Image (tube, rainbow over all chains, first blue to last red; front, top):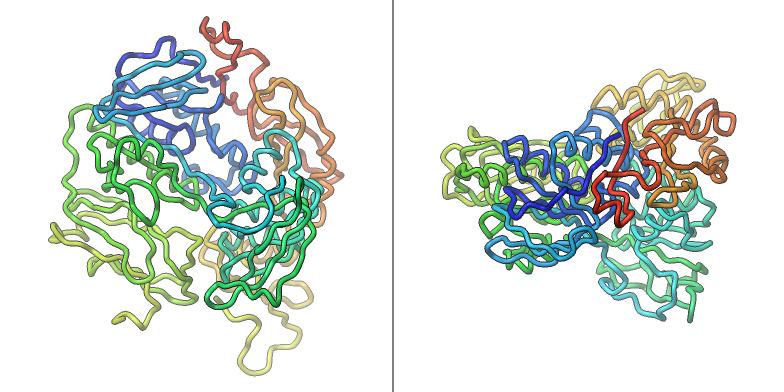
Length: 427
Length: 158
């Protein structure tokens, strides 16, 4: 049996401390250990590491990391197995409640009580939080039955409780689509999925397998404009939106339902980042990072959905392994690469992570487009890299590899990342 | 996106073109499948061999990965995640999940172990996608025993 034991005794100091035991935290631990760091602590708030993977019981994970299609819990198991093989101290049921600028962390758990550890480096892997009704300001009454899709996922998949009998879903993000299928299979009637945008926010595979397979209607350019019910939700009013995304109230309709799931986006959990006064990217909401995922505070690294919302756990693992490795390197006194190139979002690009690159190493640049382009698209990084792809959509994160050869002579430059329809390159 | 069912000039006799979205990976290639009397003659629009296979399969015998949960006693959560050991015919997905709704298992559970055989007459087993240690098991650390808190995750693959 693979077991993670509470550390017999928490050491006073660590080379690398990782906050969060989801795919990012687990991969960071492996990355740090592979670089030779020996004193590694991973802190997770749940009784079992794995993070949100444990409630994502569907398949579709791991094609890039493990070369096969596995479910969320299986992905978590494999990632955890590597950490246990690496002899990392894993502290579960634990919270990091504070972090000082000299990297003294305050922890709290039933087995350690309140404890303090000093760490040479830290990797923040807190994941993201779901946007709520408050974040999108839906008017109406405040009955029970309005909740985020991920919360409903935990209720159904971990605790065996159904959120209601007839559900409406607002937002066609992947979690919303997957919950539409999950609830249908568990006997809940799903009245439909509303999406404010004129195209689905989730990936195409989920539109086909979660909605079309079950004849669940997808209402594009439509939103929820009112919520009815005193104690329990009794129904919602939905309305189409015009080109400026304003509801057209003359065409509104009432939908009776006792449950409204919100799948309206994720925001990086930046609580510790804010305590550490890290520089944040106003678009992602997560910390600004270098090519090795180091934040604006030396020795503090960050990875995964706590930096920017990824579409695949595989990308999270890859990025976090880089962060963990760099944290291990720094803890062992190795020099960090010189970050001598800036990257910035350009035409039709919402954000770019990382924010700086190094001319001395190979790194992955991740970004998302703002608007879909149906047809041949040119992706370019400054004038050093240019690639043609078939189509781009905001739902899918784009990654490009950039090495020293491409960046030769770019030291000191700021490179714009653009996504342009083929043939309009001079725009 | 690829145009649907448009051909230049008269189509060859009996050829029907259907478009599918390949679900082999998140790229989601738009596939065009040409078929004569349900026999696939050509698949276009794929970027890897998975797409070719998917287009043919989806047209002749559509199947789906199926994941659900069963009741779990003695774990730190109440549901054990399970999946179909092989893709299930699309028409049997609902009955596959319904048949598992009443199943109840107890810890310990080995990852990959069979939770139910030949579910809903499909000939396909349901297997555990999470390992669960025996109740109260975990580390031998005294501190853990004092709190009675399992600190264990996962189990060996089976």
